[in-house]
Image (cartoon, rainbow, N blue to C red):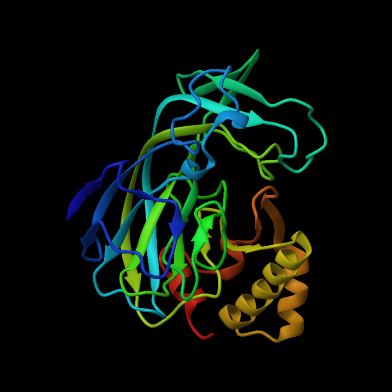
Length: 306
């Protein structure tokens, strides 16, 4: 089955009581049309964040229900294509980002995109499309789409791009998948509070793993599988990601806690996704070769146990 959800069907909060705008069986391919992170409010460099309606920031297209998904399952989202539409926008301003005291005035830059490259002044940057916001309905309370937690949300993790697979724990029937906040270019950290924000279309294939789920979203690429943790402080997020990596290796490889701990120190990288949202996001990246398995087995193996 294949369907499309248009950009005007979007949410600003991941809430437990979300109602689906579409429902599909597992194995379906769905196209999500998305607005940019500013809800198309910034069209030129004379438009700044000081003049926008923040109630319209971070729209996430959806939600989509997947038939048969129940709490305790895992929603599998394979990102097949990301098509960028129009120009890119990046903003900064006083009180914003990882260095909130750096600027006295807000600033906006428009990045023309052509031939797979985004132009920032005299610098050309290769376009590497990614999804900033992707998540499901949480268990008990609502989270703005700009905040990430166990349900996903605004993880701003650049590994969530074309060819990646995202495993999200399910808390409500149907899962209620919504996504948006596409970036054409973004570095780890996203330190000024914005990447190269763009609108576009995302094609995904959705599936389910019944009866098993991880504590946090996982992102699988050809090289790594990352545990993505979002908490109020960097220290708390890094400690949780490191502990989750130890537990995952211990379970996946059948080794002792001590051996898993040491193996993490030898081969597992702790990385920053973003430092600028209400919850910061970090990741523990486990190289595929450490697990001695490949393909879809990775997700299924790591989700087993508890």
